[in-house]
Length: 545
Ligand SMILES: Cc1cc2nc3c(=O)[nH]c(=O)nc-3n(C[C@H](O)[C@H](O)[C@H](O)COP(=O)(O)OP(=O)(O)OC[C@H]3O[C@@H](n4cnc5c(N)ncnc54)[C@H](O)[C@@H]3O)c2cc1C
Image (cartoon, rainbow, N blue to C red; front, side, top):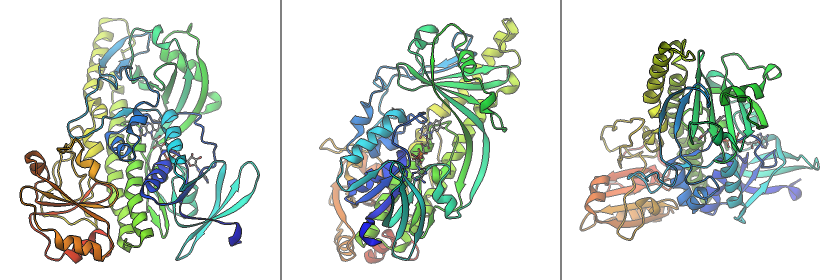
């Protein structure tokens, strides 16, 4: 019955970090949305903690970067990597990294990668989202079924407290309902990929842990025994809570037979230290991707669309890129200037990014477990044991640098073969893991450069398209401005003349999309400005000017 139905522009199913990021991006753009979650918003077992440079750039755009940095993780906690047999046992190697406070911001960004466990990050996003009147948030509200027509999606929900059933009518629905996505399954979208193994997370409280060993503060302690790398403790709040991940095998770990306390003791390396188990949860490590990210008016984002091994911390951060890729496109459709190809471009653009980031994650995991053959003697208190420990430690330290230092993965993704970007004929630059190579080549993240007024180029992007006119005597952009106006595409023109920035962008005119990726660039105004605007708003069949 229409009278009792909720009507919203975008329904987001799932208030994990991706659903919340999308709600925030939409709300920031002025789009109304409803976000529902079957749970109550509390986090029983924190998973991610590493907020990438790119995600932090989006947080800056949304005005919350400082709130993420100050969410509660201690700024002076040292984010080292330690390789050992146990906290009280032998040290194999260590890689020392500065604390959040002492870490330098990379020159290619305004932001640093930030340690903010989901225990803090998700509730912070939820608080920020709740500050927007145009967002309706409903916890303990489960999606039970849905259908779509040419004009809308109708979602049927049930309130977990009252049992009340309610329909939500939305122009678009985005499934951010996690790895086991109900929406994906119900929509009949298959997944491809592979299972990498089964693991168990143990969340525990141990205020004395740091005082009970000599390895010092670390972001992660990796444990190696004769079976190879068997687990890791990750810092959660920087004070008293920790997560031990026990790496399983290709067989599921049987929770009934699993002695979590014994595993924690094994990791600590002594039996006399008190700790409290908070939660124990099995999970599947996988590299899976949905075969489609869209069915009609329904989209998948985050873990609902893809999973990857957490080795690298790319899972949530890739999902946030999904959300930002989708946010402006939904806005464009709702505001009436987006063409049908705009929605189709979401999947075309994001799938290769997901594949790339998942590949890097699996590669890191292979490095974690790849030392197994070298570990037969690592527990021996003999010269041979010492040699084995040194060899394994060196291998892990050198190979895993690519996991801890991954700016290239975080900033270098680009939308090749996008139907809404116009290639300029230049070859793609290399795409290394650790190093980010700034480029304004179409499809890439428009690079950061400081402006004369103290802002970053990144601060220019977000709301609509931005045409940068670079260099002295800016080129006439009247044709583009008129074309955008005629097609109701929001476009701002910004003039920049700074030698370093001119060189970085490498063209006199650069058109940047609302998500901060370059759509087109050239040294002269396009011959057919109308067609260019049609392409970038998804209303032309194929890219090309
Ligand atoms: C050990 C570990 C460490 C990790 N570390 C990192 C890291 O450092 N950095 C990183 O980027 N990623 C990391 N990840 C990955 C990251 O945790 C996930 O990618 C991220 O949480 C996915 O977010 P999401 O919002 O897509 O899904 P989820 O966080 O799973 O949220 C889905 C939400 O949907 C709700 N839901 C489900 N079904 C329904 C329904 N029918 N109706 C209503 N609501 C529903 C659920 O209640 C849930 O709240 C890690 C993962 C693990 C396992």
